[in-house]
Image (cartoon, rainbow, N blue to C red):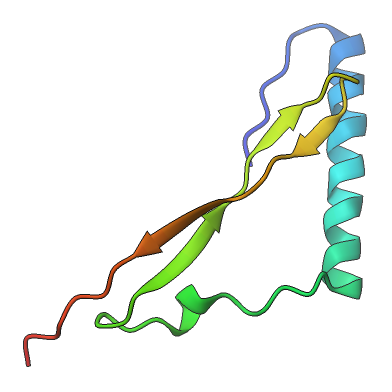
Length: 82
């Protein structure tokens, strides 16, 4: 994860708090689950269509870090040449 902030300490402290809050959120999702199934990409074969999601963070109108709706990427399978 790359996080770029300004040289101003007040801004850095604010970003640090938001990142810490988001990491806590992620730890809770890992610890208690969120209903998500294991990633189908890990079990993919070349001939099977599979998908994965891209997750994006943004700053909300309240200046807090938000997780946006994930973008679904579908990878079409290719027939094997065997």
